[in-house]
Amino acid sequence: MSADDQVVERVRASFERQGLMRLIGARLTEVGEGRVRITLPSSPQVSQQHGYVHAGATSAIADSAGGYAALTLMADDAEVLTVEYKLNLLAPASGVRLEAVGTVVKSGRTLSVCTLEVHAIDGDEQPTLVAVGQQTLIAVRADSSRSTAPEA
Amino acid sequence: MSADDQVVERVRASFERQGLMRLIGARLTEVGEGRVRITLPSSPQVSQQHGYVHAGATSAIADSAGGYAALTLMADDAEVLTVEYKLNLLAPASGVRLEAVGTVVKSGRTLSVCTLEVHAIDGDEQPTLVAVGQQTLIAVRADSSRSTAPEA
Amino acid sequence: MSADDQVVERVRASFERQGLMRLIGARLTEVGEGRVRITLPSSPQVSQQHGYVHAGATSAIADSAGGYAALTLMADDAEVLTVEYKLNLLAPASGVRLEAVGTVVKSGRTLSVCTLEVHAIDGDEQPTLVAVGQQTLIAVRADSSRSTAPEA
Amino acid sequence: MSADDQVVERVRASFERQGLMRLIGARLTEVGEGRVRITLPSSPQVSQQHGYVHAGATSAIADSAGGYAALTLMADDAEVLTVEYKLNLLAPASGVRLEAVGTVVKSGRTLSVCTLEVHAIDGDEQPTLVAVGQQTLIAVRADSSRSTAPEA
Image (cartoon, rainbow over all chains, first blue to last red):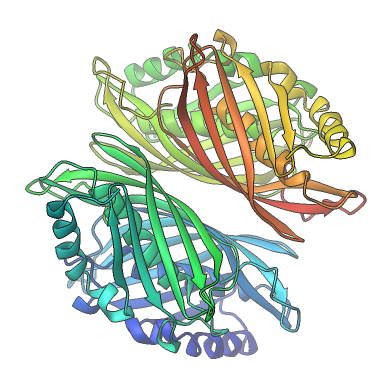
């Protein structure tokens, strides 16, 4: 289901502030209720030593996708921070682009849990699952001190 | 202990091929036997929405540090791929730079396991632990098919 | 899809040798291709301090379910060992029984990856998702030395 | 450092209520500030299919050790629940007993993070590291509703 306009706007505004997403060329391509997609074109700039997309870039878009998926279900004045995540890398991340989808499995008042999936899309638009993950997030009030909180 | 020159050279040459490390400005600052350090200067380019270093950048240097730490203990003709990793984000990654250290806990013929630690260093050179992780890696022969292997 | 009889028999025979499954009262209740279910009746014997089922018991059935799910897709002479797993505990594990399902996401020649789900079933047969996890497994030849291998 | 008597007593009382620890024969053998040890004698009752200690039993003592380590640093009226944990199994868990140690890496007002280590001790009292893990825990008030909280 598509998230309401205000939520979509909040997610887009936050995404725009992520310098790393701009640096690597990632785009926010879907914002649904409890489900967000981020797309990353392949390029030598985001590669590891064998020419595939670096796990760090794969992680970056997966982490952001999960974080924003959780945010779509949180209170209006909440911000989201990643507590931890775990990612299995299943296959070389080649192809023309990566698509990371974060989906909320459990949305609690304090903690949320997402599953993360990253597909590599080849030139014929065929997807290959290249990474799966699981992520824990925490809702923090926008005006609260962040000194003891984990970080996104 | 310092790794021997040949190993250091292999790690440096591989690191130089990682486009993502260059893009984000990361540098290889220590190569020991079973222990590698990667340093990332803070900048708006690698930020998340609150101005801290993005978890994806933190992950990228932690993953690479662990991968190269494992590689220092592998056979000469082996390459290393990350099977999976898990990272807890403990505190906002602020400061002037991040230092990620990967340390081998178990080096097996096929699989290796590393612990990952990332500190943020402030302007007075004081470190704050901002992330801890655990990583599984696999040794693959440089000439083997990578079709069924997980990816780094 | 139901696994063939020989595979089911192999899984059952192995499960019978797991002393811990017998001790806690777990039963193997479904063996499909790449998907295995293990059921654990709730009892004070498997509790934690608040009376819910202990995360260790939840983990034990989740780990075994994933391990056997992976085994159903491995070569006939392979045995399976757990490399690592990660489990998020989403809700108190109460109810009359737990049902853990392991499902293979990727089955490789050497490594396999499973997702793990555990539901608590209440007296009205209503399920609540109490844990989700992700697991990495390795296939080892039954006659190979296990000295350097991770353990199940 | 040894924890104060009141904390030790709280941990012991809670441990005594864990039916699973009694069932598998685990004992609480060290309660320090931010560090707890649990010992499990090896026996066929806690085995997996190859005769080693089952990963579920290894996990159970590691999870409890980490949970109680975190509890030693929490407020007097807090209870601890495991949010998630990840465990790498490094070697077969054989020997005469297992010793799991949980150590707090970060103790926050809401969340804590522990590292987990499990050694197998052989008949000559020689230890082998058989598992390492990382765990996230949450402090909940003893009188609060647990309906939205993750479970220990």
